[in-house]
Image 1 (cartoon, helix red, strand yellow):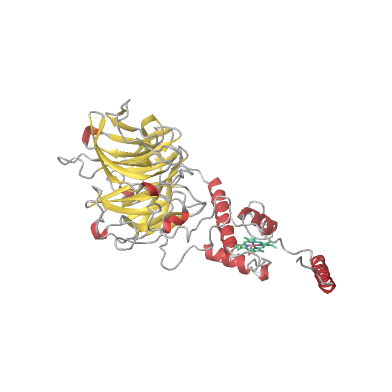
Image 2 (cartoon, rainbow, N blue to C red):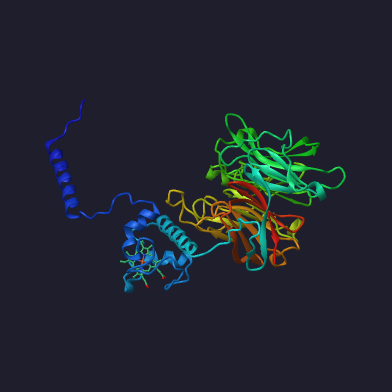
Length: 488
Ligand code: HEC
């Protein structure tokens, strides 16, 4: 039986509609139901009239001159002012209009603009000419080109004595550099790699006891092709005889079912210590899997350097957890190195990783630590919308420092040699986006200062201290391996 309306009901619903349209008429300035999440649009809507098109100031002060009148310039200070306003000066309170993630987005947006304004007024060294001497804070150096005509060089391995270098190219080619020249043919028979997107032959390293009789192991970390266009980071070792890759052994491979289709966030870098091997895998574009201990992605792993799994790893007794996991909650590790003078139980592994838009991190890796991605982050989405308002949470590790805006960190090493005494114990870090090499001065567990050694001669893929005390850098566009040599 079809429903029928009584006249009374009809009358009631008519009144109801009239009431709704009346209230809409009397309040034409009702805010839009869905406020944009895009930080740039929020700024244009709410802030531009007083703080200016380029945040240079107007009725309100400049937000890009690093001069802060109402606090210390920290994220907390900015958030507090934007939330609560400064009634006496005419800075409105936005806490009722903007929720915490949107407030966070605005802070990241202000940081980006301030960095751009700062950079516009700075002259960075750009040592393209091989004779150009860069006079930096603690050392003068030249940039010497060792090899050109490469594809995308991702890392180098130092071999003893006259044996020179091995250079990993993203394409999968493993090249030998010996006697001052690049050998024309790549090493034959190296594993097939998935060289698409951010994948490829990621790392080449010689075992620390390479020169000992019976060793001679070379490690390769790479994007390993699975089925149906999937891939995951894997590690093998082998030896090189007469220009050929031989004796290959599998050191780490995730179960094939856990390989992923995404072309991003493969991570890696290798650290050897007392028979252990540490390495990182990025979250492969699946943010939430960085928190999932049944997945290899988004983790730092620890195995023995022959591939066996240590029985005392932190998650071996957690049901379902992968036993190789050492720490988790990582987005995309791009640098991993042991602090000089630390080893065994006192080993300090430092790592850097890509944040999203903002929030690149320098971390001190902790056994069993959760480094928070994507539950907490100092960055936002690439489209300018927030990921979360949270930058810290109990039980989650904080970075030592973070870069907002992102510099796209890539590569990390400690300086340990004798050739640059002023750099001893410093961290060297490369940057893809800014094409920089940075030097970080540490004081205990903190970063005391940062210096940009050079900028603008190519995306920096890796930086490594050589056994000769010189600093080796892989650059892209065009692919080159260079080294920093002391100059007067
Ligand atoms: C009606 C004008 C007006 C608008 C709109 C406005 N501000 Fe302000 N803002 C001010 C004034 C005035 C001050 C105080 C300036 C001073 O002391 O020199 C201020 C101060 C600030 C400060 C503190 C600066 C410091 O030196 O400590 C921040 C941060 C800030 N505003 C951010 C924002 C953001 C973000 C928005 C948009 C969501 C916004 N403001 C919108 C007028 C405005």
